[in-house]
Every structure is written in structure tokens, then in C-alpha cells.
Amino acid sequence: MAKFVLIGSGLAGGLLAAYLGRRGYDVDLYERRADPREGNIVGGRSINLAISTRGIHALEQIGIAHEALQHAIPMRGRMIHDKSGALHFTPYDVDPKNCINSIGRAALNTTVIEAAQHYPNVHVHFNHKCTRIDLDDAAAHFETAGGVMTARGDAVIGVDGAFSAVRQSMQMQIGGFEYDESYLAHGYKELTIPPGPDGSWLMEKNALHIWPRKSFMMIALPNPDGSFTCTLFWEFEGSRSFATTKTDDDVLRFFDQEFPDAVPLMPTLLEDFGNNPTGSLVTIRCAPWFYRDKVCLVGDAAHAVVPFYGQGMNAAFEDCVVLDECLEKFPDNRERAFAEYFSRRKQNADALADLAIGNFIEMRDKTASKTFRAKKKLDHALEAALPGIYLPLYTMVTFTRIPYATAAKRARVQDALVYASVFVLAAISVAAIVWFLAR
Ligand SMILES: Cc1cc2nc3c(=O)[nH]c(=O)nc-3n(C[C@H](O)[C@H](O)[C@H](O)COP(=O)(O)OP(=O)(O)OC[C@H]3O[C@@H](n4cnc5c(N)ncnc54)[C@H](O)[C@@H]3O)c2cc1C
Image 1: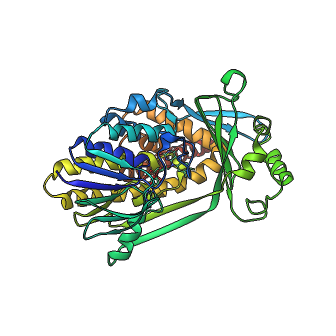
Image 2: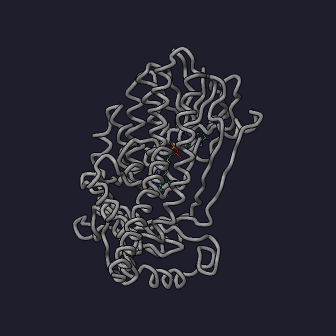
Image 3: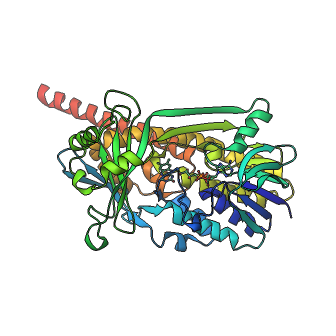
């Protein structure tokens, strides 16, 4: 059996190692960080994330969905906090069973790594930082505490996240490699709402909380211990921004003005704001995602997206399912397997990147409006009236496995039909009124 060298044991790396291990391949998985089970924070990304149908399906296929989801908290809709502290709840779907789930990143990471280690042909090596790949030799070079070393396989898979060293090697060694990165003007900072007495939740537990403030927003996802992890998405620069908010007074003034109902729930606001890093938000598109039968990219390494559709990890997990299917289809031709995986995923990753940026505007601005809530009600009414025919975009992306590009296209057609129907109905109504008055 072929040997795969995987770079990065994040969410997709652990899961992919399990899939490849199950298929009988020899897998060596190298991770630059220490073993997360030794108490190291997975670091650099969110503490919790939303997992939905695509991600759950990928976990189910390898038999770990139940274990992974045992502490996840279902979120049934958006809880909008306006500036007066008034709350408005909008369910995610007409079917109350359709919810997204808040799950801890570190625990999920451990679950997928342990699922991989269940296969004796999978070996995980922590504290190995990949520095570059020789594409033609499928050789990966590492820095370790003991010095430099090289690992060779039949193929190297880069599952090493948005700032992938594998992808950088492809950029340098493949003529005509396409690469595009674009950063939002907004950064993000994580903050905490601690548990209430006896580990209770101080806000509605089964909701994703949003404080939409037009050009910026804060969100909060529940954790099993009763706390919420809040994320402030805010401009890096500008008259009111991360750059101009320096002192404790600046922070308190901003939060008192914008999120007055949250401030009393955030006793560690000033420490959190001062100590937690400000992350950046990047969209990465590249092509191709493979080099002959030697190298392939999976997850954020191939297609990092901004987090506003809650789909980055879900899409990375879906990559693992598709790559596994392609390896099954072409067991003796890895290059065809990689090529088919790329052609099945690329347009969908591009569609997701656009959807994710679009959803930032929807979350931070439109969710606050009555029109948005009315549109969601209309969406849900049409979905109930036309089951299987009309599916809102959010439902297709989050609660089905319809490919992202198909979902986006279908939503455009549905919207055009709905707007045309509304226009025709309005025109008929006006004509009827005119006819009535003219009689
Ligand atoms: C604020 C925020 C919120 C998010 N919320 C959601 C959400 O709600 N739902 C969702 O689906 N997605 C969400 N995402 C996206 C999600 O985090 C990513 O899509 C997901 O982590 C991608 O998994 P990955 O395994 O491809 O990459 P990563 O999780 O980044 O893992 C990459 C791994 O590779 C390792 N590595 C990197 N470089 C090297 C190297 N040179 N050598 C060896 N190892 C290396 C890293 O240490 C890491 O362990 C969010 C992202 C952010 C930033």
C-alpha cells in the first residue's frame, strides 16, 4: 500500500488521516505544535465553532459523530441583540430539528486525532514544523527540537491550514500556479462571558447570539461549561477601530455604547481585550490543488474562507470525504484521484468563499432590520409551502450536502422567481385598483 505523508494535524488533518488509515494506507502525520492532549491549546483559531450537516456527515462516515457531538450545543437560530438590549430570535430553518452545533475546537481536534490513531498504520508526530516540500520526490523537510529531518512518502498531503508550507512549496515549484489572497479590513478578537451560578448560561443557551452594528458586529457561541465565547469582528483601522482603542477607558466606552447588555456579563472584558490577540481574516484561492500523483492540498491549505457562514471546517471535512471517494474510484491511479478531487471541489470552494463574504454583510448589518426578519419569514413560508422545491440558501448551505456552487446558483434562480412573482402580483394589484377606480 502507498504511504502518505500528511502535514498538519488540525481538524482536517486528523480526520483525513483516519480516512486514509481506514483505507489501509500507511500514514505519517506531522504537526508543528505539541500534542493537544498535553494541555496545549490548539491556538490561533476560534475556541469553539459551528458544525452542521456536511461536517457531521464526514464524522458519521468514519463512525465518530456520536462521540464528537456528545458535548456539542445545538443552536436553533440567531438571537439578535439591539442596542437597547431588546432581543429578536429568528430560527435557522422551518424545521426546528435543523440546527447548527457549537463544538469545542480542542476536543474535536483530539477526537479526530484519536480516531486516526485507532489504525495501527497511522503514526502521528508532534513538534515537527514542515519547512518545505520537494514535490518531485514527495519529500517533506522538518525542523524539530532535535534538528532537521526529512520524511518521504508516495505522496504528501498539505492539511496545514491557511498559511500552508506545502502550498508555498507548490507556488515556488509549479510554473503557472495560481494564487490569490485577500484580507478583510476587519480583524477579530475573542472575549468571554463566564458561566453563571452553578454553571448556568447567562443568555439563551440554544442560539447563536449576534450584536449587529452595521460595519462591525460581535457574536457569541455557547460552551458546555455555561460560558459563551464572544468574537468581536471590527475594523483594524479607522476613527473607531482596534487601532484607536488603546486604553481601558476606550474599551469600556466602546462596549458601553455598542453592547450595553453584554458588558455586565463580561467581568474579564478588559483583561480579555488586552491579552487576546487580534486575528486577521483571509480568503485564499489557488489552483491546482495537486501536483502529479505526488502532492495534494486539503482544507484551509487549499481554500481558506472567512468564517461568516460557519463553513470553513465543514468544507474541509467534506474535502476529506470527496478525496476518500476519489481514491476509492481510482485505487491504482492517484493522479486521476487527485485531479477528480480537485475538479469536484474547486468551484464549490470558490462559491463558498463568495458566500462567506456575503454573509458577513448579512450578519453585521441586515440581521438587525425588520426587512431581514420578514424575508426569513417569507423564506420559511415558501419552504413549508413548496417542500423540496423551494430551499432557502442558508438551508441548502447548512442543512444539506448540495454542492456549494449548485446551492448558490439555485438560490439566485429562486430569488429571481420570487422577486418576479412579487412584481407581477404588485402589478396585478395596481391594475385592479386602477380598473376599479376607473369604473
Ligand atoms: C474566528 C474563526 C471562526 C471560525 N468558525 C468556524 C465555524 O463556526 N465553523 C466552521 O466550519 N469553520 C469555522 N472556521 C474555519 C475553520 O477554523 C477552518 O476552516 C478549519 O480549522 C480548517 O481546518 P484545517 O485542518 O484545514 O486547518 P487548521 O485547523 O488551521 O489546521 C492546520 C494544522 O496544521 C498545522 N500546521 C500549520 N503549518 C504547519 C507546518 N509548517 N508544519 C506542520 N504543521 C503545520 C497547524 O498547527 C494546525 O494544527 C473559523 C475560523 C476562524 C478564524
